[in-house]
Length: 213
Image (cartoon, rainbow, N blue to C red; front, side, top):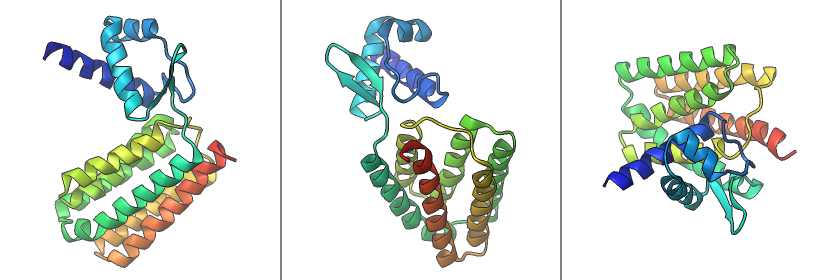
């Protein structure tokens, strides 16, 4: 049990390094460096890296070791398709369950994201964007759906290098978020679905413009 807990702790530490971009897509990993950073021996590091590789966050080559995975266009297409299916599938029930208390929470998530955009928080904007959309998915009451959304989001987020948000997109994203919030508040399922489709289409085009073009 102790070994299992240690493996999980190291797994979470390494994944957090990916979130904070201490480890970036394409970077080759070394056991010694990671063991030093995590304050453990090489064994739990190896176990954690093996799990991350099985999950698709790392690539492994015999005699060369582990590298942080870089997303391909085929993977990105599949992940964005799944994300749209999940968000569109959740929105009707999410709106039906949207109490005033939940709507206040969503407004707070929207405000926090907008502040990160204004402060040009490169990493925090992605985490807060995830929280904003996961909050909506969570309104559905289906914990598995919300967890699956987060997994899809992180598979996109952790597999490409983050660039500063261009000014045009920094203006567009809050507007798109607000359109979705208003649709939910008005309990307009059709408008909410249109807002989701528009947001994902624009976001996908933007991300592709700097990782594939």
